[in-house]
Image (cartoon, rainbow, N blue to C red; front, side):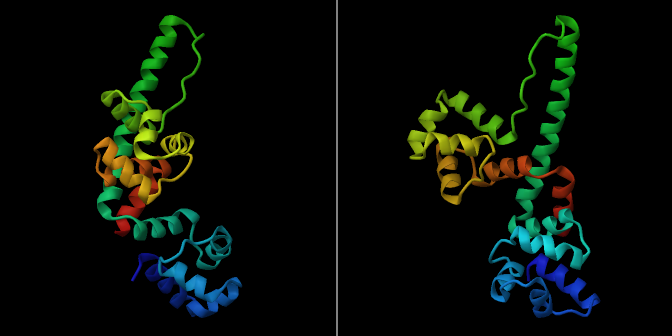
Length: 196
């Protein structure tokens, strides 16, 4: 049984409610609601907004249940490891920039922080001496669409994940871990790990 279903059932039992009664109270399609609970369909924002006050849980806690069902433990662990390493590198980089500003003056423009996915893919492309444009052609994906994914603006589809994995010679789970590390806060990922 999915973690989200287990957690919801515990709360519903404490409140003497059934899933059916909850679905009726939410005024949502019951079949869709059951699919959401069983992890067969994503929870809509509308349902989540109505559901959280009834369950008396935070959005972060609810999200941790969803993520615990969505990703295997190994991917969450790797995302946490990556996030911690990246945080340390960013801290060192900030210290270095502060020192440089003191030495050179404050007239340098601020550089944007690259997301983990962007940094790692760009690093691999640089090592392979190919551009994002060449990568897009190689995997048969639009350059604009690929750039949106690499910059973390759009999620990675399964088919694109497979193609990137083959082209970059990096396991799919590793690329997925980079994306998850970018998308979620460290404390949320650690909360997910506690559930798995």
